[in-house]
Length: 262
Length: 304
Image (cartoon, rainbow over all chains, first blue to last red; front, side, top):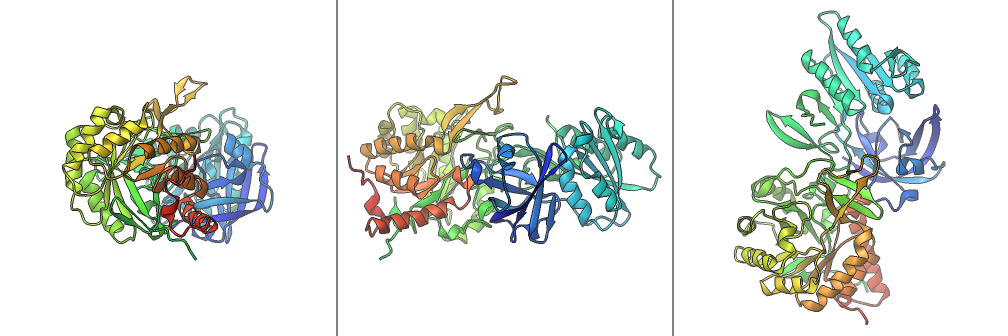
């Protein structure tokens, strides 16, 4: 069930030098939100834009819903100017979300690329058990929420391209080292959000290790509700190749179902 | 007194003249959580071909100033897939169902039309002869008078349903295309489809869309569409369904004054899913303010 609702800005704060958290009061949308879902946002300041902007849900607490964003284009630049009590139109929650019903023997392993950590934090807060987070980014300032995960009782491992925090290199480097040291009967299950290259790398490890990986895909979206067919992804369902709509059938896909073409 | 909005267009009864355009509203269920379908005059479902069709590679859509360019490439589940998957849902709703059809050959257009003839719950066929994104079929049929005439006549021969050719905007004389459709048995016309368009990433110097080019829709094309509707209205007597960049009741009213009997909301469904409902309310308010009792009074009411 999705809703359309005008949200009032109740919080808009910096998270480090490059990121911000926007919190909207959304009494209809927020209580419906599940980890891995997203909202489609429309700003009055950006009234000439014909497409809404999709954002992963970072938090949903009661009537409040937050997104974590980085200014990357025209939409997010305009979003920076939102003040308390401004309003924004929201369609959501959209998409399928991460599975939450894990077998009791499974250890959740979250893998984040940069601010792809946002929906994973929401997921961690909704999970009854603790696991491990691997987070990678270009530099220390791109490593977000590590302390918040630790406060929830999660182990956190960090990788940065420039080595300014954690190990130097890709996040999969840290993941590989951890997987090497696993006890034989361990049952890790992966949950990942980040760039396509990272998702594919995580998916490859899951498949070769005979484990599951839930990947949050990002494709250029139009409508956000499954009508326009702009954001399709080639997938394999029941042995059959087909086109899934990332906005509606996803954005979460199991690694085995995804057919990467890029 | 509240003005009445109900119309009968080419034999299709609708509670109001506001429709949602093909390709922008899926097959109905996609927006049903947000929009009460029973309040709409009609839905024109996304284009259907004989067999399932995968469409183009991604990226398929890019936002530009005043609109968007799409090159979805007519992805659809085929006639049987559509009827099986979506008609049970649509039959439960109180709105006219217009099926947009297309083919790669003349024979395919005719065959698709034949398959839909007599299917319960379908009120009309919109013939897509103007999609800019599929090389075989699509606009290659709609940009010459001869092939336009052939497609319309071929579909006419295979169905008793009202048929509504959807015209391409990129022709030199829209009136001539409207007339050739009317002469070959069209019951109404939809105009216009998106404009051939292109966007380039200046950093990589590559086209943004995988298909290289696509069709421009959205507010940018509205004034151009108003002119084309005005020209087509002078050329034919059959009713016109106008579309192109409607975002408000004002845009819809302009179309009706220029000559349209009904309107379709397209790209604005993505921006603001409640646009069609807002257009219905705004249209009613306008008629009341102008002391008109029936929406038909507005049609072709332009003062020159």
